[in-house]
Length: 379
Image 1 (tube, one colour):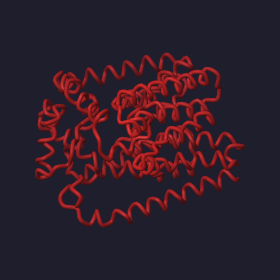
Image 2 (cartoon, one colour; image 1 turned 90 degrees about the horizontal axis):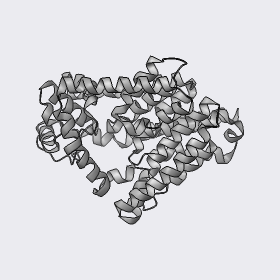
Image 3 (cartoon, one colour; image 1 turned 90 degrees about the vertical axis):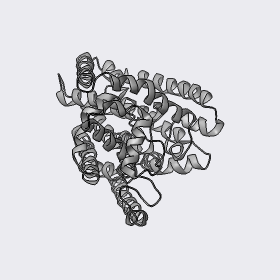
């Protein structure tokens, strides 16, 4: 009963956070000009990248999508030449198979459809994995989900696909295989799935997902040609890597990883990569050790969800619904933890981390990995 009261409290906090977020952004919304807020940032944040890529696909200009300067030049034609910073389509070319239909819609209808799609996939994943209605409502109203809507990002979609993949039924589960294959457009969210399935000896899932992914890659090469893959590897990825390793800006306050913590503390990206690699290796060792011994599938899911948030160097605050899902799995199956102050505090921290990380990183105290780490051991 106490655990249920805590979950009701989380839902109430989510509703209050959503109301505060909308109220604080009202002035910004009222001043929208075209597709830009008064401060010059695009409405829907990074959704402008998806819509731009979709428009270029429809126009047959595949070669302009992954050449960063050409892509940004196209975005300038949308914003009237306004400077919206470095924005690119960071996802591999088989993502264009999913993106192109949005180009048939106007900017705001497409943004609405994109937002609903992310919520729908997140809802479907939560329900299929077995979250009850209260837990699902918490996930749909949490700060990570709200921020994902504001930034027009893929966090809710990726988390939903990950939950769908985790919910694999016995045998050849087409839903799980399809979700895992689609998740390869954002591999930092699903890279631990093969490890989980290997520990469960579900070799068929691994093989069929690999085949489905190969099919998507081949289809993208047939439809768009090989130049997008060449330019993605030769221009977009190096630009993205340079931004993450040497760039600066608000995005640094949105990343809760050990890598970004060390970048903020030392300013040395090489040292940050080394420290993160050692930290991720330690987490991986704990994860493998436990996966080989844990028989309860929901504990395995919680381990994977929390470990993903710890091991991925470029996870952003709008991606952290997966961390909350892992925390809720811990809470619902460990009554002693659910009733304890320490357990509830850690789950509350996982819920609040998408907002908290921006405060911690901006203040020079990037301790988010240490906030997440205890959840791995609770799982």
